Amino acid sequence: MRKFFWILIGALLGVALLPYLLVRQKELPAGTDLSSPGFAYSEARLLIDRTVWDAQAERAILSHQIFDTILEEIDAAETFLIVDFFLWNPWRGAIESTGELRPLAQELAEALIRKRIQEPDLPILAVTDPVNRIYGDHAPAYFERMAGAGIPVVYTDLEKLPDSNQIYAPQARFWRQYLPSENVAEDARLVPNPFHPEGKNLTLAQLGRLLFFKANHRKVLVAGHRGAAPRLLIGSLNPADGSANHSNVGVLVDGAVALYAAHSELDVAAWSSADAKQVQRGENYRAVQVISDIRQRLPELTSLPEAPPGAPSVAWRSEGAIEDELLKQLERATEGSRVDAAVFYFSDRHIVEAFKQAVRRGAQVRLLLDANRDAFGREKNGIPNRTVA
Image 1 (tube, rainbow, N blue to C red):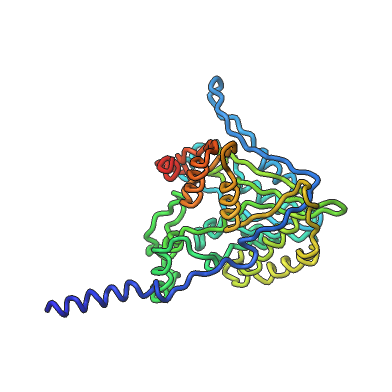
Image 2 (cartoon, one colour; image 1 turned 30 degrees about the vertical axis):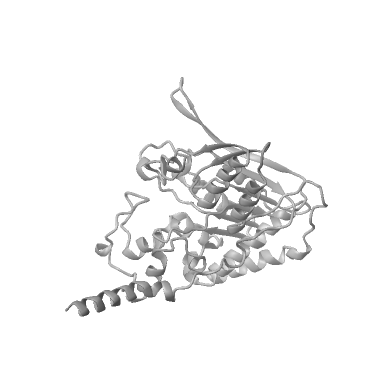
């Protein structure tokens, strides 16, 4: 009996370890993990969204400089337009009933549809994260309207990205092939909707995708102009109603870096739209057409002029290259250096250790951390920032 017991334990361990042996980690695909050379520019503007509490009036005073600039850039685009936003939804979570949040998501969609009507020949591409349809069929109605207006809405194919949850992901990837179809009846949707309390429940498959904890976290706009340099806007703003009162920073810059960013965005859209399920209405043929149209209007990456040595320049960093750049800059911080950082979520162990090492080398470090009291319109307990601090 004891021998049988140990054989059983060994078999169970073997089955449990099997996914870690068979499932291989993916490499970052084309258009990601990029580190460009420095490019010249003629204009660069810092954009700031502020939320300030007026104690006398007992109300919040909002300044949406970033979002208002996004709307201005959409209106001014002339040769092409690319938008890529992580959170782009109207869900307000626990603060649904306050009525105090600007409807950012709807405003952005309306601006794009209006631009399409005004300039029907302008190629417009929209990229977003599948969290905005909760990895299933919960897409806001305006995405359908955008698709109907001829604007392809591409959901980033997260399957092609490396997994961040190394404990859960191999198990989920291996065993889900033996699970039943995702097409289940309404009464079989057992998981309460975590984003939209009044929305319909989720399937177990949708919950399973959520637990991978990975996303297209970009917030980018690229606009082309006739007889003028293209413009790039990038920042921390999510055009999601539940985030409308958050403070954010962004930058608007022109020049070749915008073209570099456009190529990066088109690569992401290309491998995502290869699967029709990753495009609103399944119209991946329309996405392919728009991607091709924009590519034809862009010069090749190899022809983009780099900034002269010593001249002011701006460069593009994406995905893994962002951490590499942060670590490189922190390694340069020694006695006499000062490092100021304002961070929304601060938990990456490599970056935390790099800050500590900079302090040990004599650098002056100041951190301004978000309180992490709410996300997706719901209250939080301060993780990760309070714990790290």
